Image 1 (cartoon, rainbow, N blue to C red):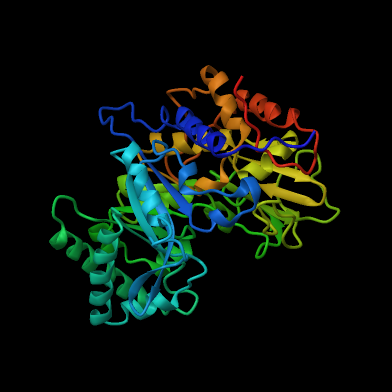
Image 2 (tube, rainbow, N blue to C red):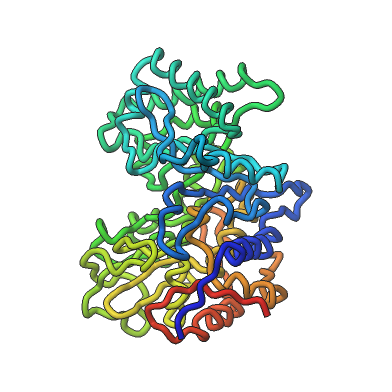
Length: 447
């Protein structure tokens, strides 16, 4: 049987179903009942994917997120510029900026951010902006005008990374100056509402120490979103290791001990960044490692020799990378690592570390019970699958215990979090109806 493809209505239904799963988890049960942030990135290149991989602003449920960060704008001559030909309005069509901001019509509390930077832009445009006070002033003035014209609520700076890729060590202080000066300008400009300032930051300890002026971040930035993923990748790792594990497991290796969500979140907080400013990053994709003829032996989960990138997804078409909806079909082979809080799949010659509903729930509870400000999702267009439709029928089984044993700091160890067996049933429902082994899991269930 060929895989069932779904259109816009089906995609929107899936996104709505994620609310059913996460909103109960992302609302504090303490005296402070404020909702945790659900900071969702949406990429402007998702519109170019083929067939059902295509994803446009109309596919987004406006009530899914508290914030949507539209990625990316570029920097040219110390000014923000649109990246895509259709980001801005034209006489022929409404632009992507306007379409994203129209989501506020159906959710008056939604905040939209314009993200600038990203991996492809690199460091050089940022280094030029921060090189002098005059350059920073010009950039900040342009940012305010650009955001107001296009109806965004703030700027999300995604510099990957300060002091790297052509950026010098002195840029740490200069970037801090930019943040402080931008925040001051936002305050002076604000009328009925002040523009928000967010930044996306790295997760590795050595990078954090080298690249970021913590004092400036504390004074100027409203929200920091940690890229608490890609701790390992097939292009730079000799072994197949999970790219976004919640915990370090039982490793005594110092480097491995630091490459997990638990450590990096607590490390940022230990430097003085308030937990309420921190978003825990969750990737809706997996990394595929080519392990050749090596297959996991009984009891062995990670650490197989890796020889580079494994197969990619048929829609995202990038070796070593699979969106969540491209791993769903493989979940019959999924193994959940309870000590790490994440699943993996070993199939043919590939080892795939990825996220599923179970691991996302654990991270939501980690953020909630450790009093972090919210979760950041990268990205909206990679997370849809039939599994979310099953949430509705099985919602009573999906409530995690109100008292959950979690690790309070990187130095303390507590009992492992119990695995929710119901999500395994949901995984089974995801793959059981598909007989095409190379099909994609765009399955829609509305019984």
